[in-house]
Image 1 (cartoon, helix red, strand yellow):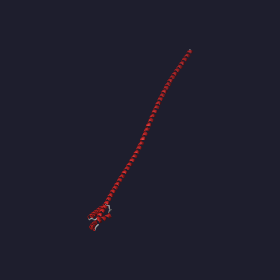
Image 2 (cartoon, one colour):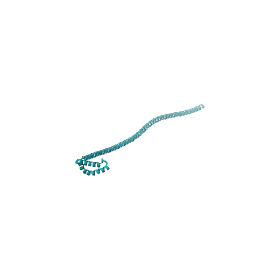
Image 3 (cartoon, one colour):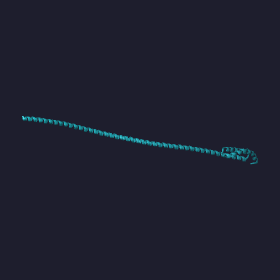
Image 4 (cartoon, one colour):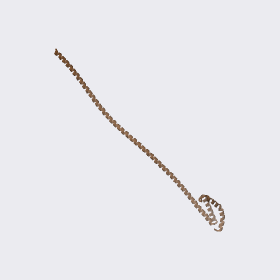
Length: 213
């Protein structure tokens, strides 16, 4: 670089001092990739490049170009980092949504299993009740059939007994009647015999009287 270019650039360097001072202050307080520093770096780099081009100061123009490239790289890095952070946040949100959905599905599955268990227990209880009721009904039907059979048998036996009793009573009555007839006949025979003896006695008395006469 020639002395003339250096002399021409000197006033610019003086005018640039406030920006340089501000850049030093920001560099101590903010990271290089922060928005204020990249904005200031882009402004300083553009000014250096423009001044170097106008003043034909290749060193100044190169410095400005380097500053712009570094700022662009930092901005790009910041953008990429922001995008990566956004993707990480999205991934975290997606993972959280997936976790919540998995928890919801687990709870739904647990509720379904609990409901199925309750329904199974209720079905088992209903089955037992129905089986007990069926067994009770079958036992009642069997008992009723047995009672009916026993009643029929008892009725048959009672009917037979009644028939036998009636026959026996009829036979007994017939025997009594026959005995009564025989007694009557015996009584009549006895009376006839008495009358015959009386007649014989009378006849004998009459015969004796006749003999005495």
